[in-house]
Every structure is written in structure tokens, then in C-alpha cells.
Amino acid sequence: MHPSLPSTTADLLQSSWSTFEPLAVELAHRELNDRNLKSWLTDWSDLDRSMVELLYRLYVATTCNTADHEVTQRYQVFLDEVFPQAMAADQVLKEKLLASGLEPDGFDIPLRNMRSEADLFRQENLPLLAEEQKLNTEYDKIIGAQTVQWEGQEVTITQLRPVYQEVERNRREQAWRLAFDRQMADRGSINALWQKMLALRSKIAANAGRPDYRAYRWQQLLRFDYTPGYCRQFHQAIEEVVVPAALRIYERRRQHLGVEKLRPWDLDVDLFGRPPLRPFQDVQQLQATVSAIFHRVDPKLGTYFDTMIRNGLLDLENRKNKAPGGYCIDFPVLRKPFIFMNAVGIHDDVQTLLHEGGHAFHVFETAALPYYQQTQVPNEFAEVASMSMELLASPYLTSDQGGFYSQADAARVIADNLEGIVLFWPYMAVVDAFQHWVYENPYQASEPSACDATWANLWACFMPGVDWSGLDEEMRAGWQRKLHIHTSPFYYIEYGLAQLGAVQVWHNALQDQAGAVASYRKALALGYTTTLAQLYQAAGARLAFDAGTLRQAVDLIEDQLARFAKVI
Image (cartoon, rainbow, N blue to C red; front, side, top):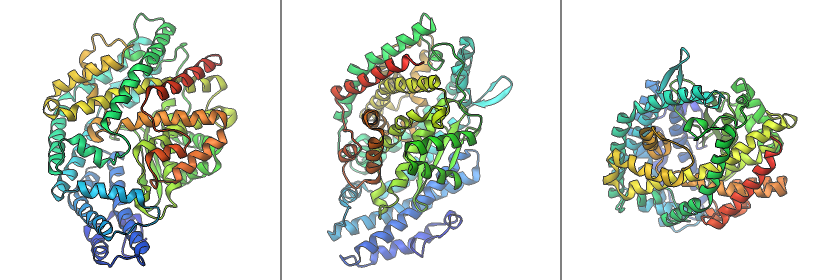
């Protein structure tokens, strides 16, 4: 790390722009030539790593405790005072490198990305981008504060999830309705916040000279390998291939449960009336067992995870005033990841930790790359890392392999996961298609009732099989509950594409587990030094949007489901 930058996390957290400015100014004025290119890039990487780590550590702190007003204030000060100046300084250094005509080894993709980012940059957008981050934090605060009274205790909405797995249907319905009533109570607040977000994003796009926010966001997300048209092709392929398979899954569930119609609270309960699985008692047991699983997948991956445990880089348990969801984020100075999630003792928590573990391994595998800019992996492949790990770890879920379950229970959760993959693709299509509509029709979408209607139409197209009669408003407001729509616009197609890539990796693993894992790790270690399509290829998969590739994946899943049905 450059000697002018903070050497400890404690010092970094006390930093202001004055900490980073001298190095930024010196780099901007330093002569740049063939002889000093590597040292200049190294120093720039150190600067970027420090500023990004400060941003991420403050973000993590706000999500770990949404009620910590001091941390929230510090985060907002960073967004107001450091973030705009940091982006402006970074833009100067990008332009300096691009103007030099120099092309460092292994830097073709970062240079391509920088050219795009430089083209998109506008000074007047810096305070607007900081404001967008504040609105995202406000959404997290609204969701994080949602609690209900259940059996005499205040619990979060997430903490009700285990009840949805209980055999007694009336209790499931009671818990489901209680949760949705609480969420619907924030409908007005989220609508008001949504209108602010849309107006702000339209202004950001206009400042950048883009016809709409989708065009702006496409370039911001560095999507060079596919267009919105490819997304529509993927939606159509899902409607053609996956929706019928999803209907078959729903119909089997309805028949096994012996109900006339499948309702929203019937989707998590075990088909055979078995009690919900409770794979762990506390997060220490969760960590230890997942560690054993990762060691079986690959000893080096297990060592990575143990490093996270030793260094306190996991915050797994659910609690009040904790932001929703789960994520893995990298601390670039430390060159190690941090995992955040909301565990409540169910198998979904195991699956989430396996998923986020895949992201974490990506951070570890790219740590050897010399420049920070080479580690900025595209989301479409970052999710291959996480989703593939869920499947690569599945053979080791049994207790005789160090995992959580008996053979029958392992078959049960693997089958549930495979069904979940099929059921996810149509939902992904709803979320992605909804966002295309929003930013193609920003004026119409600024009216929440129009959003409700569009969401309902897409739901009817892609999500048949579950009866929402009498719950029309709850269904229509589904877009409000989808975190990505509000805080990470257009970041959702990645999951669908990556899931298809992950199924291809899993197909390879069914033939040669060790070989598939080796290819997986090799692809992760590339960072973003090659194209998205080439990253897929290195992992043994293909970036695809077509019905034929989807059909192969669905056929494999249904074949495996038939096999597991004999064990369950």
C-alpha cells in the first residue's frame, strides 16, 4: 500500500478527502511513460482500493445496524464530501491513462471499460449519484424497520419465514397475512421514495446525454456483450420453455398437498407433511458445517472460508434494525471479502451462505491480480461464481460428508433447490421486464398505480400456477418488495443468465466433479481480464439467451428431480 495512505482500518475509517487528495493530485501531475507505467498503475490501484474500502466499510456498518444514526451520518458525509471528489479525481486519472496511448499487459478489458466510463462521466452528476445512494439507504431503513408481533414477541418479517414451512396451513396463512399487512403499511412511503428515485435517475441520464436511464445504466453496468433485445429474447425463451416446467412443479405440489388451489402460503411447506428442516441451532454451527462442506469441494476454498471466520468477516444472524437480504462485498485493501445475511435457522440460510461463499471465493481468487481495475468482475459472471457453488457443494450436504443432513433430507433440499431454479427464471423475467417497461416509460412509471398494473400483467404472463384471488393488491405491489428494483436498477438479469451458466457448470460436475471445480477456480482467477463470453467459456459454460440452451438445462433438472424423487 502506498505510504501516504492509511495503514490500518481504524485510520482509514477516520479519513476524509484530505487523506486521499495529495496522492490523487500527485498521480494527475506525474509524468506517465513506458518506464513508470507499472508503478503509476500500482499507486492508482492503491488509491482506489483505499477509497472503495472506506465506502464499503461504511456501507456495511449502515446495513448491519440501520438504527445507528452516527454511522448513517458518517456514511452520508462520505457520500457528500468524499464520493464526488473521489469520482472526479478517478476520472482525471482515467483520462490521463487513455490520453497516454499506453496499453499495460492484461489491461485490455479495463481500458475498454475506462473509455466507456469516461464517455459517461459528467461532473454535474456527482452530487446526484451521491443523493441516489442516500435514497437507497432510505429504502433499506424502511424495510429494515418492518416488524410484527407474533406469539407475544416482536419479530422481523424475515423471522416469520420458518412459519411458512410449518405443516399447519392456517398458521402459515396467518403468518403470511401478518407479514404482508405490515409490508403494505409502508406502501405510501415506498411510493413517495420511488418517485424521487425515478426523477433523480432521469436527470442523471439527461445530464449524461443519454436518451433514457436504461441507456445510461446499460453503459454504467458496462454491458458490452448483450443488448436489451437479448433480454427480451431471454424473456421469450423463459415463457416458452420454463413456464410450462414451472406449472408442472406447481401442479405436483398442489396434488401432494391435497389442496384445491395452491396459495402463496403453500409454497415453502414440505410436500409430504414432514416438519421443516432445522439444520443448525446457531450461526457458529452454520459456519463450522459450511466450512466442512467447502473443504470437501476444494481444500483451498475451505481455507479461504476459515480465514473469513478467523478475521470476523461474517455477519450472519437476523436481528431487528438489520437491513434485509444478503450480500458479499470485498474490502479491497484487505483483499478479503465480507458476507452479510439474515439467518433464522432454515435451509435457505445454508443455501444463502453457500451462494455468498462463491462470491467470497471470487474475491480470494482475484487477489493476486496486480491492479484493482482488473478485479471488477462483471455481475453476469460474478453470479456464476455464487450459483455454481450452490450446486458444486450439493454432494457434500450429507452428514457422512461433513454436512447437515441424512441422505433423504439432502435429496429433499437438493430437489427443492433444483425446483427453485426452474421457478426463479419466470420470476426473474417479471423483475427484468418490469424494469425495461419502467425506463422505457418513465413518466407513466412515476405513477405507482401504473407500476402496479404492469407488474400484475407480467405476473399473469410468467407466474401462473398459484392462486392470488382476494390478494390482488398484495400481488400488484410486489414490485415494491423487490430490493433490486429500487436500489440496484437492472441488476437482475444477471441472476437469470448466471443461473443458466451455473447449471452448465453443474452438468460438467456430474461427469467430473474435480475437473469442473478446477475450471471454475481458473475462471474466477481471471477477474475481468477477458470478455464476459470468454469467462463463461473458461468455466466450461456458454453465455446464452436462447430457448435451446434453456431447454437442455430444464431437461437436466427434470431428469435429476425424477432421480431424487426415488430417494426422498
